[in-house]
Length: 239
View 1 (cartoon, rainbow, N blue to C red):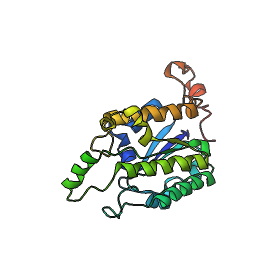
View 2: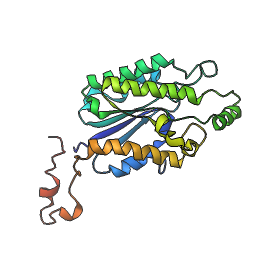
View 3: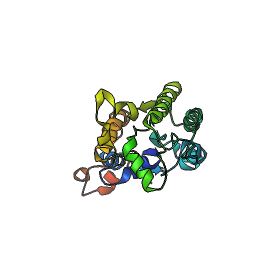
View 4: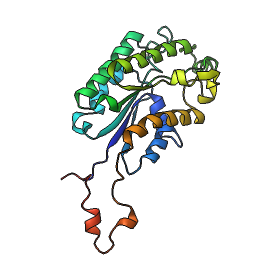
């Protein structure tokens, strides 16, 4: 059996939706085709409290040796206001501790720290998200400034634990950018937002994955008179 290296995407709805057409995960998967499998483990509505409990069932030691990279993209639900959304809300200190625990678990199963990438929550456009909330019969349940506090904690945890971090909250608002163009409903990514995430994440991943070989030979390199010699001697295959 040929073992493709794996890039595992962990996160909430922003990750779950990443395999939609032209979204950030599907674009990454296309760039990495025949080099590694990009596996989506996004769980819409989940926070770090729940993800920490599930992580051993999502990434086990048996597959860790083949992990080329893992993204951990939570915070958009954790940062919900407790008084308006107690089910998803996770206090800031617990959020940071949960990220630390997830990194520690991944390291304990031999996923190196330089293969782990934290992604902060993106900024929130309150007027747009408030319309979504009102449509569901509830009040505005997130604030951009609060999302920024969680993004800062995400960056700090990455620095403490020796992992990389893509700070979307900061980068999407740098230079007085109109970050609303990156959001479809005030919270989730628009097409432009997906391109932003993919391009910035790819600049990190490309350095880590640039040495991955193309799996199996190009078709015109196959010896048509003796295909066994070309196709059945692959170094990526298990013995």
